[in-house]
Length: 325
Image (tube, rainbow, N blue to C red; front, side, top):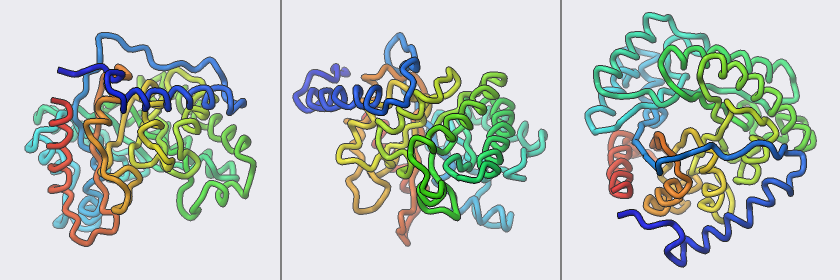
């Protein structure tokens, strides 16, 4: 039996901490629009498991170079079905032809393969940099997202991930933006994301903006951007390992009402030294928001030479199932 989140002192404190953040997110970052609201939910929370293909990035990259090595996306689907996932989140980087759209025949084969295995495709994602000072770099990201919104629609994926942080060769958003003021950079990003969301509306694909510990390192920053975008077809992808605050669970609680997709990481700040995720606490927060949808697992090597993605993913799935139960 799932108890309401407010029933224990710990979760009450969490709720109070979260409540304290919300006014800051809505009013303290004054440039954000006030119209953007949490996603309407009803009928109570309903969570289903998904596997993010990036967990197998090294093997997928090896296969892209030599088809006799590693794994391809079809084999990732096979693994997901074998261990009992409900869905797969198929990162765009690993499709044939990326960053261009794959051939329709390839997409249809992959879609049918997932269907035969009883798997939904919960999302996909691409690389983009909307923090860059160069408008051409931002425009390239918009064009790529539009292309892959159409790919997602063909696959039947309801969401596409968009980054809200810098990409190589830049290491920080300040470097990418030429040290432009934060408000100006957020305005660039909002304009680009809004254009993508409008395209997503045409194809029935939600643009899910992911926090990644750079421009967006807290729930307040994440919500500020979404409020500035202020589009029904833009929402949050909550990466549990990339809120770099003193209390990531409070940030997660702030953003759960706005989430349409997730990345559930092994540790709270995606390093081997940071605390391991408390799956029961995390699931309780997600359920309290009324979220109905997929909660994809994504494991990372984090510099471990003995990293075995199949073993790590399986271990996390066991923990997630126990929390869901």
